[in-house]
Length: 200
Image 1 (spheres, rainbow, N blue to C red):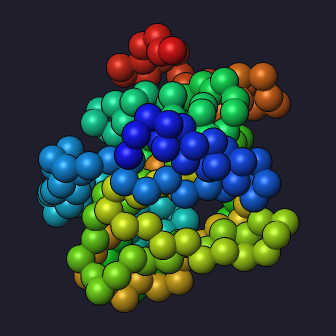
Image 2 (tube, rainbow, N blue to C red):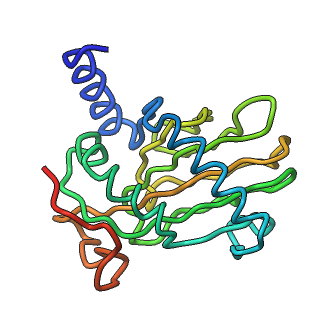
């Protein structure tokens, strides 16, 4: 893809985000980093170094992982381009799901005003749909490994039905509008996050 084509594609996603409150970007994370992060996530789950939460009680989950916080900062420029906002990063979170796990219907807390959910990989016959409810109706969104969904997490109800595959890993990267009502949630009200650095 040429730079002009990439710019056109990003502009189209930005328009979609403005209209629909979400946009999908394909192939934003590639191998070898993608495969390494999937293996890492699965290894952490297998070694029981993660917890669980009420949103998906059977899944292994962890916040503030050093590698996922690196992604939080790395994807900040793209998140700003697609949303058309200057953003503060808040926190990263990831889950490793197994057969039968669900994601209950919910909206997110203030520090997740803008969210990016990125598929790290799965062992299944195909993608596991995420359902997103917007003013335009309910969308079923399928993400392959390396694909990302940008969405307004505090506004859009979202959920997943029981997973039929063996395993799936997903990372969530959260941001707030620097000029919006949730700006105080910068860094999720921590003093800092690892790897924070100036960006253009």
